[in-house]
Length: 225
Image (tube, rainbow, N blue to C red; front, side, top):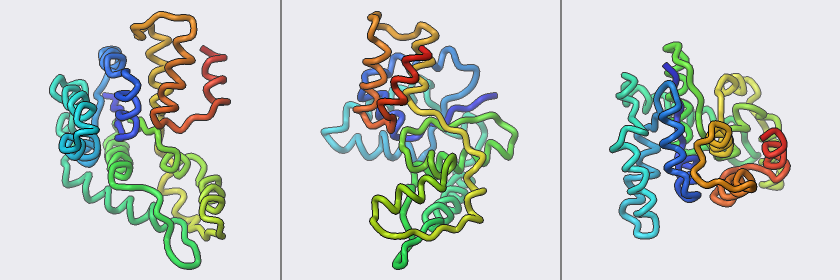
């Protein structure tokens, strides 16, 4: 079995870019499960359903659960309490890995941490998995923590002290952005609209919906596309 774990940001980017049907098509072509944690469900459905501005987006994503495009961890026999315990363990490490002279630097929140927690649990079970996440900080924490330290110093305008021994805690996660998922949909012919500039339009729609991707990265995807 393969598992694609969705963070809130990736789902919101896809929904805001009107790419829900493409997500459905990707699921039909995926030999595995699309999973969201209880914490991510709270961010994209439970709380937004009570806010008029976001109610429609929440309904769209809820429909994906109703149609079993997205499923909860119980579908892959993972206990929610185990995810919750691991989530808070990861929060504790991540949000104390960098410090200024005054306080620890807050890096990630509950939703992202729960995705990392589920990924670790699946790794322990020998289940192949990857996390769909558009937020840059979490990906950098796993892929390039040294660069994340420099970025935080630039943002905060002060020196940061790191616990390098904790870098290894985040080194084995695998990530994909919504832009890469939609590129796969494009290559598989799953995009409904046909236009010679559709790939450019798709990538920039996701960028402006919140995906952390640079113009250079978009141009590289288009070059190989």
